[in-house]
Structure formats: structure tokens, C-alpha cells
Image (cartoon, rainbow, N blue to C red):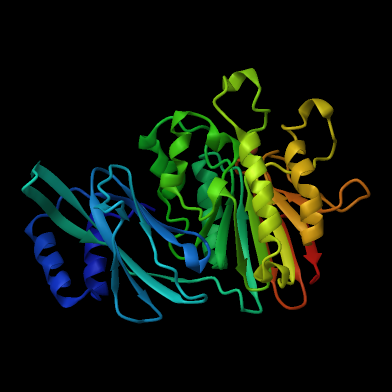
Length: 404
Ligand SMILES: [Fe+2]
Ligand SMILES: [Fe+2]
């Protein structure tokens, strides 16, 4: 739900935990005039690892700002959206990169935005400030014995589906939300990207728990697809990253397009072969790290599944990504990945281990309300249980994994 300007302001005043001077400046500035809201929707926290978090705020027009964070009820600290010595002044989204936070920390945060007028080099004027309500998230903690998380896939800008997924997810209060690709249909205009990635359907999809972002093949389509990183956050190169929540180690990898780089539709404008080679090197390295090796449960998330119900040689990128499978499967087996969670086919499926398929795979549904699915995973010392349901609650698959 899009937060109204008045609500944004008045609830921030109630929160009232700013340093005194800054607080009073804000009150006076805000009282002086109430400009049209510069913010759209709620902030989005993405990482999801506590060492690599960023907070994004969608904007309705050119603005700058800062966030304030308090860790474990400590003093409020200001974080600027600094890049190469400059404070961001953006039209569509502000991205604040947080300093590394302790695992399991309680993070409180507030977002402040303001307009800026550049009259000359010696006359820069800041407009009235608007400060958000105070938000609270609990950072992921690899040492905890339990965790639970939610997975979405292939929402393709379908507002009704995103709304239903968001309602269910909010009720579950997960440790993190993983959005497994195809957030969009294509990416042609930066003006649309905040709504596509930061506050889809105007919803604060990850204001109260962190998002793990994963790109799908539709998110690489269009000239503005080169700016996806500005509208979300993922700590690794190539949208591949690794993190641990309680007993579950998670790897996310980017399967790129569903056609070879040489396909004539691309006109030479993609080079996913190179990205895949870098990810293969990264995979070999990350699986040797102690935090990963010691995890009782190990999962891989990738948008295009590595196997499908049939292995059609004419569709070896489309149904499932055979080049990624060939590049990664031996490493994944060696590293002990127990299940792959994917989307892309718009047809939910659970593919257990067979002689031809050494790793089990769960694949989520499509963008329409009746085709969409939600995955909910709950892990403790005894087992990791992953349930995939329709949005009407009908359970499609309920799979239990035991510790390695
Ligand atoms: Fe899709
Ligand atoms: Fe897809």
C-alpha cells in the first residue's frame, strides 16, 4: 500500500528518535511547507546477509536523502547514499548501502528524503525533509538452530498475484524473502523500474525482512535491463551470491537467457557464456568455505531449472538450462546441494532424484493468481521442510530434507 505523504511525515514525528538537532531541523523544515510526496511506497531491504545489506527507497521525483540506523537499540547513525564522494541525487530510487552489521542484529531504520535545487555551485538549496516511520528487521543469523523463509517466482508484474503473495508472506513473518526471477516482462524504461523492483504494485514487499534477489530471463530483456542493479541489491557479481540463515546455506545463481548467446534475436547484445564461466569459478570457491561446508542443509536457487520433465535437445535452454547444468552439476553434487529451487516454466513441479537427475528440484508456478505458487521453507535441527502451495492454500508438494 502506498504510504501517503501525511502518514509518512506524522508517523515519523511520533517515532521521534533522531538526534535532537536534526530532529528539530526536520520538524521546522517539514512544518514550513508540505511539498508533494517525494517517496513512493515503503523502503525495500535487500541483501539478505547482514554483512551486505542495502535499503532502497522509490521516489516520485528528483531527491536526495539519508537513512538512520540503530543496531541492537544503539545510537542512531546516519548513512548517506554516497558514491565516489558524491551524495546521490536521483529521480527514481535512492540506494543506501549499509555497513556490515552483526549477524542476528536487530536493525531499526528510517528513511529521510528531500528535494535539492542547484541554482549555482555556490547556491544549493535543500527542500523540506520527510522522514519515514521507524522500521525494524532482524538480520539473518547463521548460528541459529532454526530458520524459515518464503520463495516467490515469475510474478511478471501481476499486481493481484504480488498482492496475494505479499499478504501471505507478511503473515508468515519469514527471516527472508527470496524472489526467484522474472519480476518483469521486460525492462525498457528506468521510469518504470522502481515499480517493477522496489515497490511492486505499491507494496512494501521487503520492508520488515530482507529480500534475496535473483534475476530471471525476462529481467535481461530491454535496454534498461542494464540498470537492474540500481533498483535492487545483490552483493555478488553476476547476481550470484551466497548466504546462510540458521542451518540453511543458500546459493543463488543466474541462468541468464533461455536462448544461446548466438541466437539472432540478441544481435550480439548478450554474453551469458562469459557470466556462466565466472559463476562456475565462483561456485567452486564458495562451496569450499567453512560456513557453507558446515551447514546442515544446502540449497541452490536459480531461475531456469537445470532439469525438466523431458530433455528435449531442441529446447535445451528453454525448458531447462542444459549449459548451466553441464557447467555446474558436478560441483553441486560434490558440494552437497540437496535441492534446487527454480521457476521459469510457469508449471509447478517437483522432480525427485533419479538415475539421470542427481539432485532434487522444485519448480514454482506462473504469474496469474490461479497459476502462482508460494514456497515456504522451515528448518530446524531435525529437518528442512519445503511446502509449495497455490495461493488458495492447496498444497502441491511437501518435501522433507534431512541434515547432510
Ligand atoms: Fe516467467
Ligand atoms: Fe523465465
